[in-house]
Image (tube, rainbow, N blue to C red; front, side):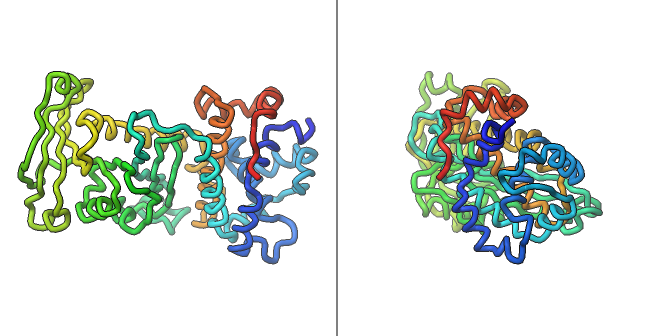
Length: 374
């Protein structure tokens, strides 16, 4: 098969090479490199993602068996020791920068979220990836367990990770959230679970004109300053009450001195009563509940990438090698997302990723419709 007809070659055309080379230069990625460049490292790791390769030996043997297809990118031969050294020594931030370059382009073709309101909608959460402590001693989590944690700001417009950071497993979600500058524009809405219920941080969001929706804890202290009447139609949607409150706790009232909205909601599917806190007084109470329910999408996102990307078994044991593999995997996710939205592909990302085994048909079908990055 000629390289021009392979789907993999078309995937590589979607990479913004200028931005990639800019990142390589910024982090001296190709300094003193004579043969195996950062670009060749990237296409090798991307290949391992697409083909679900589990080891350096497997990658080496597979590429060697198809060496005639790789001459156009200068990849004539690869040794696992060369790839291992590159993963350990070349700064993972090269591929982190590439991720955000891809993200900017991907946002240009993604559809908006399904709610009627026009505010940008995000969910923030974290997910733990278990590691063997004896192999990854730098990722100490518990006495006999290692782990890293992925903190993700999930954009509901396009199901994209709008912001991503990887820390060791010990880092609590709210501590990480306080230290990061999330790309949230005024009037954005962000939903978080109770792990992020820190009133000082929530007040900082309010000061930035960002709306939040979260679950209320049972024992927090407040006083009711007003409430909305609940109509029969609203009650049918599960709304129990809609109150305006002020915090009365000694510390919480200082951390969040403004009014809040407390919405009581009955989940008609499970029969469970829930209470939501928000600083948005405009949206309907039922919509506030639906915004929080949509937070489940980020859980599905974490589940998808763990099941379909190579981010649970790693090709190296150093921190740099692990982070390199994670960022390349997330670049692959964005490439798939871009093609899905650009071609208006109606099926899931999983179904699309599985179509890579049908390279000829997909390449012929999509070649005229793709708009490569420049």
